[in-house]
Amino acid sequence: MSASHLDLRQAMAVDQQAVINGPLYRFASRLCTDHPSALHPGYGPYVLDCPWFDLVAANNLPDDNGWVKGADGVRAKVGQHLEFEYSTTTSFKSWRLDVETLLQRDFRQIGIKLDIQNYPNGIFFGSFLPQRKASPPTGAVAGRYDIAKVEEDLSYDPDDSWLFACNQSPSAVNSLGGGNLTFYFNPALDKLFAQEQATGEPGMR
Image (tube, rainbow, N blue to C red; front, side, top):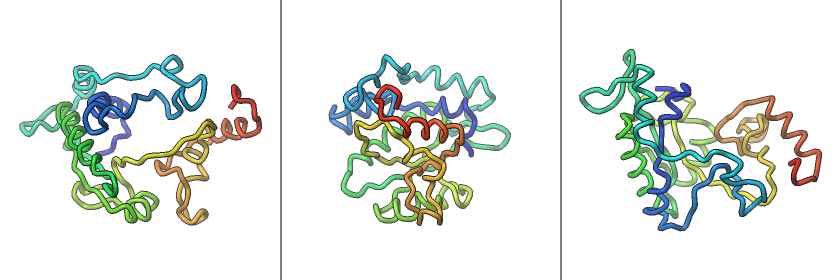
């Protein structure tokens, strides 16, 4: 099932505070953007409306759009079930398994089934993500993946072109080395990146 529908993407809510309090042992904080105020002045909750986990609202969205829970608790509409595959690498960081358990719980309460399919670090970053090869448990379309968890190391510089620019999507041109692992494609955003990169003024960037 595709998560391209806005109502479904909004309904896929995660209790971030539970993840922070549990698997992360409070060594984290909620972010409203990828650049927190600690890294760059001006970024913070006062800039963006930071979303909160709202189980009632998360259930109302699919309800209002015709996604009905079946006897198994999983929502369906016109023969399509809300079942997704979630993948990450557990190499070196076993707490990711605990995070997955919490995500499965949260999604289950909304009526979404989350299937876990993890990979060794080399496979996850070397072939699964850049080549978009999904594994078979959910019967996902070949050449795509549903949900993947990665971590990015950000700096003081607010330039995100390496994460979201069109030419940063892994391809034969960049030897599958691009950082845009979401394969986000937005030429209008590329123009903004070009403007941002043309100035050294922090406020403009």
